Amino acid sequence: MADVLLQGNEAVAQGAWEAGCAVGVGYPGTPSTETLEAFAKLPDVYAEWAPNEKVALEVAAGVSLGGKRSLVTMKHVGLNVAADPLFSLANTGVTGGLVLLVADDPGIFSSQNEQDSRNYAAAARIPMLEPSDSAEARTMAMTAFDISDRFDIPVMIRSSVRISHTRTPVACGSRVEVGRKPYVKDAGKWVMMPANAQRRRVDADTREDALVAFAEKTDLNRIEMRDPSMGIICSGADYQHVREALPRASVLKLGVSWPLPPEKVRAFSGMVDALYVVEEAYPYFDLRVRAMGVDVSLPPTRPLPRNGELTPGIIAASFGIEAPAHRTSTQSIPARPPALCAGCPHRLVFAELRRVHALVTGDIGCYTLGAVPPLSALDSTVDMGASISMAHGVELAGGGDGHPVVAVIGDSTFAHSGITSLLGTVYNQGEGTVIILDNRTTAMTGQQGNPVNGITLQHRPSRELDLVRLVRALGVEDVSTIDPQNLKAVREGLKAAVADPRLSVIICRSPCRLLDRHREPALAVDQEVCTACGVCVSIGCPALGKSSDTGKAHINALQCIGCHQCAQECAFGAIIEPSTATEEGVSR
Ligand SMILES: Cc1ncc(C[n+]2csc(CCOP(=O)(O)OP(=O)(O)O)c2C)c(N)n1
Image 1: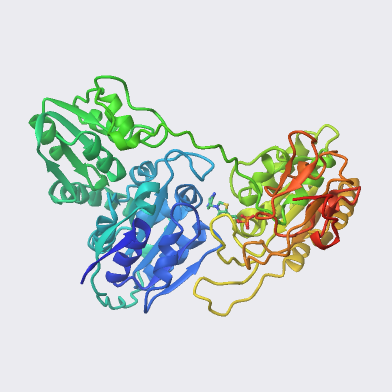
Image 2: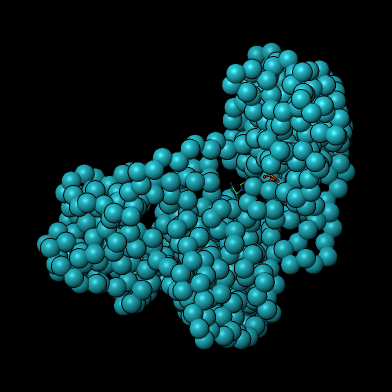
């Protein structure tokens, strides 16, 4: 079969499919999202989005208990959410093979933090494979299922932005049909009460020994001897960067990042004059290789950075070598600060929160952009679901010093982990206002369906969550639904909610404007009427700007989608439909 260009994410999906994986389940998160989306399109598989990563891993555990192979996908922070079942599954092991794709974000391009999932593999003692391109992503997905079956353990595949999103050639194969393993009741394996868990814990030691023996032998860990004066230990995307920056260096490429092969590491160290570790962010191999009693040298010119993504240029500079020419750009690119899209239904909510000087505990989603100027309306964003629990905590600390306390959370995030936070606030008689921004999608990660809108990954029948009934059932008496594109409704709804200290929930429901990409004719500014007060510009629409000489507003007709948010903000009626504008007075 001819090679095809696949992203690393798509290649993991392809490999899982070829390995006979029957069920895929995950929660979206950059850079992992395309893995499950690609898997869902392959024939003869079932795939679903779970409300969060913990649920996803537990569903996969059930598939495994039921005797079939499953693939779970998430981003690195999702692994924190799934950590509870992860650590226990290292004890239970599997019945049907279970593979977990976790995609890291070194450099924090689209996350709330930088984490290295290899530390989870080591802490949970779950084998981890690290592909360096899409072809390896495919074969490692297949190998991961074999290891899972053979060693009775879930297996993780760690990717990172460059591997997940880079397209490289892959030779795809056909699917192997793996039959369902018959059901056998085995409480000693699957019921993790202390007596059973203690026995399985001892088995985990024996398994670790067997996995180390595997890591020593497998050609996933390979020594590439070139110039013996310099030996580099690396994995994943760093392997490609090392090959580009230091093409003559000898390399120990670790495809298995847990457990490590101490004999192979020592052998490699004996074959080279100086041994280096090249890895992104916080040391992982470095600490473990040193703990084996092997000397690790520091790069001769300067240490590698302790955070962020590596590039061939950074590696070359550390080793005192001129950076590969095509990596240095002399062109400066204009800054393009992130902003809510034109017509985004979140915008007016943040403009009004700023107006009432609220202390706003935010959450994770497109609406995190409510934190950036000119809206600057958020006080915190920590992790998914934290908005509501943190608002409760602020109240416990004495409130917002005169500022009303408001939690803001998106629909997908509310389903992910906001429900339990709200339950905690109700249970403990908390106060304040919660705004659920229901834009009918998980917009930030590329518009996945979620339980609030009832759209499923493979477009199977589902049911939309009735948010009002759910919130009432949790015990909130004051629940209202408003259209966030209507400024008056947002203003009055918020005013009433913050005036009353009792807990209230406002559901702001209006679809993300990118869902159907519908646009109305662009609006225009009547320059005769505009007073240059700047109110319209302060809502931060990318289609609106201010003239540098007159200070008056103008609209970029290419970006404006005619949502009328700015027109509602203008007290002078200067923002108008183009058809009502006079030729000379109008500036777009
Ligand atoms: C634990 C965790 N899982 C996944 C993500 C990736 N992620 C960022 S925001 C988001 C959901 C956003 O959807 P929603 O709350 O509906 O807000 P919207 O973007 O639609 O405004 C997800 C899944 C994350 N940051 N953290």
